[in-house]
Each structure stands twice: as C-alpha cells, then as structure tokens.
Amino acid sequence: MKILVPQDVILDGVQSLIDNGAEIVRCKTDENSLIEAIRDCDVVLARTEIYSRRVLEQAKQLKIIARYGVGFEKIDLQAADDLGIWVTNTPSALTNAVAESVMLLMLATARHMRLCDKEMRNGNFGIRSLLGMELQDKVLGVIGFGRIGQMVAKKCHFGLDMRILAYDPYLCACQIPEYVTWVDNRDELLGRADVVSLHLPLTPQTQGSVGKAFFDAMKDGSIFINAARGKEVVEDDLIAALKSGKLYGAGLDCFSSEPLPLTNELYGLDNVVMTPHNASATAESFHRCSEDMGACVKDVMLAQKKPRFAVNHPAHPRMGSET
Image (cartoon, rainbow, N blue to C red; front, side, top):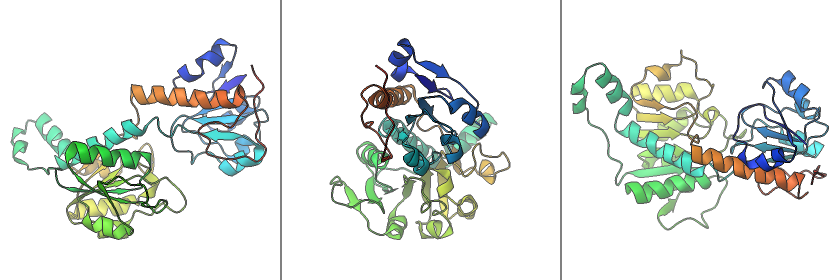
C-alpha cells in the first residue's frame, strides 16, 4: 500500500498501516508533481493542495483521498465520483478549536487588542484610555448553523452571556437549541446583530456573497468575524465598511488570497485583528484529525466498506484489498 502525503500531517491515525508495511510517498504540491507521484498510490492524505480531474485521471490505483480538515473545495468531487475514488474529511475534529478561535477574534476585536498591543510596544501607555466593547448581552448573529456555528453559539451564549440569532439557507429551524432564535431572512439578522460570525461552506452560491449589500445591511458599529472561507467575502467592500466606520471592526482568519499580500489594505487598519488561517491549528484538533482520517482510510483499505466520513458517493467505488 502506498500513501501519498504531499504536505506534513500527523501520521498517528495511519501508523498501524505504516507498521505493517505501508509506504509513505512525498512530493511537491504543484499539479505536475502530484500527477507523477499519485500514479501508483492507493491513498492520499490531503491538505490544501489541488486535486483536479487531470491529476485524478492519472491515479489508476487510488481508492481514497482522506482530507485532513473540513473543506474539500480543492478536490474535483465529480471527477472522483466518475473514477470511483472516495473523498472524506474530518467534520468534527476541528469544531472546538475553530469555535475557540472565533471567540478569540471577537474579544480581541471588541477590546481593540491589535491597536493596544501595537501602541504599548511603541511606548504609548496612554492607549489604556481607549474604550472597548463588552460582549455580555450583545446579540451574536451566526450565519451557517453547522457544527462550528452551533459550537460558537453555545460557547458565546453560556460563556459570554450573549443572545443568539441564527440563519442558514441550507437548514431548517426544526432542531435548534432553546437559547437560539432562528431567523428566516439574512438581512433581518444583519440588522439586529452586534456581532456577525460567518460559517458557510464555500460553494458557487456563497463565493463573493458577502459584499456591499451585506455590510450595508449590518447594524452600525457592529463586528464582522470570518473563520470560514475568505473567497466568500468581497474584500474591497469589507475594507470600505471598516474605513468608513460602518463597522466597529473585524476579526479575520481567512482571506481572498492566501498568503495575504503585504500590499493589502487590511494590514493598515487598526480595527482589524487577523490570524493566518490557523483557527483550527491546535495539537488536540490535529490529533483528532489524524485519528478520523486514519479511520476513513482503514474503512476503505482494510474493511472494504464505505468510509465513515465520506463526502461523495461514487457509483462504482474502488476498495482496498490489503489485510
């Protein structure tokens, strides 16, 4: 069995396979390197590299792409379906880590943490007179009420005494907690929330959906948080809303282009707190990712069954035969 690992991941979840003779294959992440390396591999442990149809068509032995994380927009699912290749992710492994990071971004933005840190390091202790915002009794609007959105709502309600509104165009209000108020109209949520936290998956429908109309509909002096996907946001419109004072501030973990070019205006805004798309990066979450990823690989390669966290459904799936 050959396991392709283009980017570093924790291998604990597949260590038993390695101990029994599985070979780890490394390569660069450009398309040509992937094509060359993937030809005779059975398994891919994927991170942020792109698996196009052109790459997958060369993967004659490939049974499963096990994504080390939640998003899978960089994998051509239709091609994987057509070729019988399973694609999996680790949907719950990162939930707590990202939810904690969202709270960090909220608090840091509300209390001007970036500006206070910068000014104090420059000798301006007088920055202490700058007043921040308390989050207790404020309204949190959660857009996208999947695992992470639900965890953010729970932590903010019970940990910060915030009131919770939720909107999700893909879900219904049939199974929401009693402390959450469901809103059927996105703009209603935007007009009522003091903090808006985005948790939608990146799809053709959500890409670029957070733009001028979105920010115009937000409550004056509110906070915008994005730990979902940067391409959902029209960055120039966000910058305009921040510079005009329409928004109090923003906490951002993801961007339209990554790494974020140093010429981007976001760097110069003191009401923006940024982290380098690492909201999920904790030792605990990455260990859970490794275990869940390994479980999916073993489902296909050893048990010859549908992997537990499949995100596609190939009509004629390839299965392993290793014992």
